[in-house]
Amino acid sequence: MIDPLLFLVAALAGPVPSTVPVPVLARAVERGEILSPADFEPQPRAPGAAIGVLPVEGASGRELVRNMPAGAVIRAGDVTSPRLVRRGEPVTINLRADGLVIATAGRAMTSGGRGDLVRVVATATNRTFDTVVEKAGAVRLSLP
Image 1 (cartoon, rainbow, N blue to C red):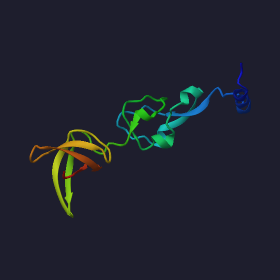
Image 2: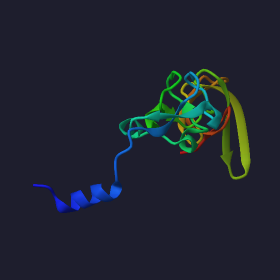
Image 3: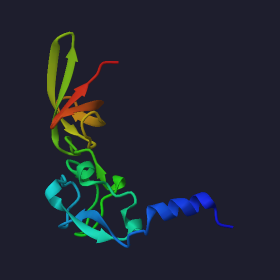
Image 4: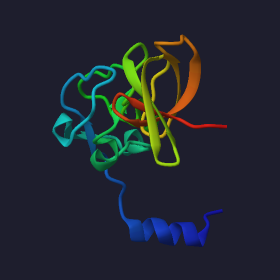
């Protein structure tokens, strides 16, 4: 039996389009690259292929977590916030308390974006610390 409400909704909606414009990558993009609006172009795709696709505004400024070929659609799992600290790179470890700032050199053991928890090793003492990313190449150590 046909549901009258479903029939009415289908009649009002009209025919389902065979294709819809979907933002896809205009070029191959490698892991770690930051996406910009210029990296996208609209292409006609089946409506089912548009499910879960990030709009250009949602993907721009984000970093790819894997290599993607030209023509690929970008979904939420394909991007992350930009990594400001990368594993193996030098960082400045800052300790702030009561207006006093102590800074020392270190090396990142994990990667992270702004506000992420990353592990670093202090170069002078060889001690490891869990820190929070503040900006590119700088992390904050909090006292317990």
